[in-house]
Image 1 (cartoon, helix red, strand yellow):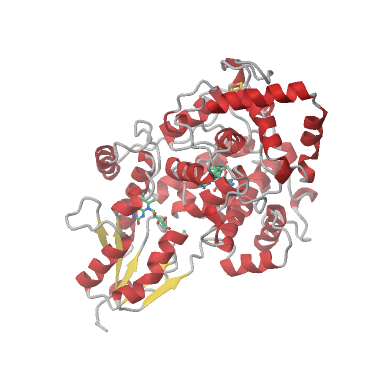
Image 2 (cartoon, protein in one colour):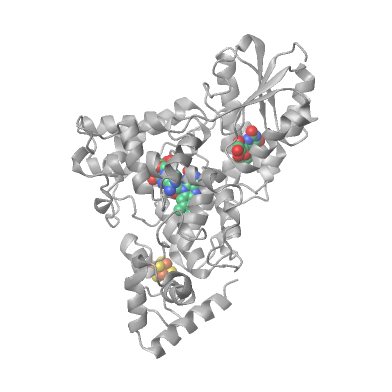
Length: 512
Ligand code: FAD
Ligand code: DLZ
Ligand code: SF4
């Protein structure tokens, strides 16, 4: 063993100064290693803005760690000698610094976890893996929770997280307002266009970000997405400013319009905080406490505060639990046997279905779409059309600035595509045009007629919806939550059914 320093690799989504591997380490006896590596930028072809955001945040984080007294060895993507992978760069750094041992926080996905776990054998020095404790629920706790249940449901997990954190609980241990969940109040259709609608802060790129933007434009020209609208925060201070903007301006109506969609309004009352939470610039529990404080101060209604807190301590923790609990093969599930290729318009936004053109167009522009667009527009279409879940998963992982496999995969494969056969959610989120028409203003200006099921001008979502149910009847007809639509399908006369299925087949045959 050498008497060199401890080497502490900090990965791109570990930008938290007191992350487990740094906590307790001695800055005088450690070297922090941060690596921009080609493999991570291309294992899927991430959106240009996603790459720029992550690399810029990494470069700013290195500065922050240096200011805190750490020695940071930072390898840039275009440094000569950069070998392009975490393992090769860690090996070079071990040599460079004659490191005696490695401490690293466990990676956020199976692919990278396998790399970290091979380092000790490969590099011949001791490697300590620290559990990533920036989450409320540890792997062991989730496994224990899951083992005690026949069926996993987010709602019960969420209640346990409320009890555990005390968020929105009364002194008597009851949920605030006498109810755990105010979702029924959170499905308002979109309001009239509102000049006071909040806007996320557009952060002006500083010199570090400008360098990164130029490099990304040059090196990743073939990746999806535009850099023209780049607006992301690059530091914790900036991310905190966006958090405050959300708390002040959007939270009071977050719940009401959580599911609404408006033409050319990508952000509405959403927080646009997921990129910062997932990368480590914001702390999820601090954020939830700040939301609760707004409620207690009378500045946000309960349905908004509860709805927001549920997304973070409920959904976010729950999908992470499922990802690790189900193991590395989860991504290969395809319970509905869907095999169709992802249509080309997912990459260009060029389709005459206005809802899809809007959701995909803003994704290309901003690397962002809100939850209902991801679930009920792009996700719903892929579900109804029977698109191969793996291709859909790769698309979501590439195009969103907040996408990491632990959170993206269960949302895509489980929630949107039902490809895990009902493990994550109790029924497929399948819907026809009527739902989209109720929750958006897209249909009015669409070339298709949302009220029609058949005919060349009929909204494709309608025929696809019924065709989806008919096609999957063997697998889904016994699901009690689908009893009503299956009854309605059974009641339709045979000629109508045949016409609907013809329209769907025709449409799918002509999908490029
Ligand atoms: P808000 O609407 O303001 O919600 C607040 C926060 O709650 C979010 O910032 C996020 O941290 C959390 N949250 C809300 N819903 C979920 C959820 N279902 N799962 C996990 N966290 C949630 N979220 C990601 O962070 N990364 C992804 O890669 C991702 N992929 C998705 C793919 C599909 C098919 C679907 C249906 C959802 C996906 N989500 C993903 C969840 C959700 O759409 C985003 O978290 C949300 O749109 C981020 O925008 P926001 O910060 O404005 O969220
Ligand atoms: C997503 C990403 C990208 C695009 N680039 C890098 C990088 O160059 N260096 C790095 O440390 N991390 C990057 N990341 C994030 C990693 O892929 C992320 O840390 C892993 O997904 C962890 O599981
Ligand atoms: Fe989408 Fe159909 Fe509405 Fe057009 S009519 S916007 S395709 S739901």
